[in-house]
Image 1 (cartoon, rainbow, N blue to C red):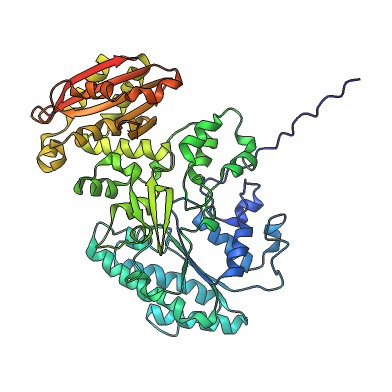
Image 2: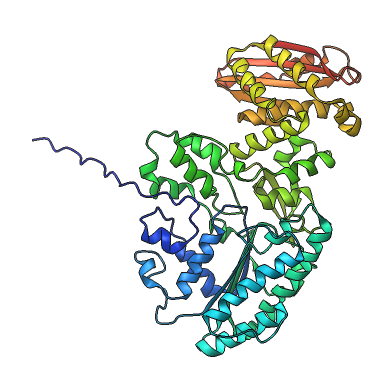
Length: 524
């Protein structure tokens, strides 16, 4: 009798915790849960006051709620989790949680209202009527009296600490007023150190220490720390184990390419919200990106005339990425903190780190460049059909159609844009339009692609083909020089071993006609 291997165990599917930020609900309602409780215990045992910046919808609120349930000693919720055998369940600590996640704070008065409301909740809960009218004194007194009444030091958790400022980021006067109000309120956390057991603040942005954080210099910033890179988000291993029942019928590598890749010097992670929506809808879409179109960012990129291909290869210091304030917004810091760029590599220097940034994945690359194209044309509807057309033309190797498509696109750019932008006189500008189209398509793009003899302006790998692009402006170079350079520099040699068709494409622009005047192709 021949023994047969046992059939693989098929795990039952669970409820997808889409938008659920409550630890108790996830644990009691049979939802998928990626265990972060062990990391929570590590943080508590090794430090006292922390700050963590992560992009929106990354699980920050859920992690804070996990900390809350841990400190309140709700052991039943942690059954079978990493924290259960190592946490002291005999002690329970009082928790004050301040959150700005709901609604929009439109002005300083709105901030005051939100804070008064939340402090009133804890005063009622502990039967401790307010003894002071101002927010700072009231918060300070509340912490001291709760500690005295409970016999334990207080845990302070602040969720979306920066949201009231970001709500007003395009109105600097209001944003500055709100910042000063928050600065005064948060200074209580340091001043109450003797009465605080543990403090944890989360947000999207890391505001400058000399401004909002000047009263909070006791916080340990773990934003860029390899040990906690996966504190929020799902790792590749989590997807293959916890979410294994959701994977059948989906292209695993496509999921990885489109959604994995956020990195803070350690294990890369997926954005939880976007990945859960993939499992729910069974469609590869820009799920996370669509929850918050970065209008402010797009405007800033255009105002500062950023060369868009450089966004995927920015080099910045760690200090620069932590420099962010109402009246000082480095584009690198904004894009990194908001989740549109992540860490590609790091170079350690004495006393500092030099970081190279990149798009985290194809979702962000595709959706951000699509938004840039919409802004450039002034039309929400125009780029979509053109991107679809580009896909079809590339698959069909229809280069005549490709030339016509790009000529139509350049012709659609409003004259007013050229008047306001100095980039339009240089080949980099024209190349950036090409780049944004291919980037929006979500294909493998390599800019300034190095070879033994030079750098290819743009390489595109798609559908078993290699497309090598060289860009020239005819007022600066002789006609035909773009294709000739591809041949003279033997750029195709780098890709011959792939045994795929290689298309050399020389694209020439005229800054006078503001369009393509030469489009030569040679296929090897």
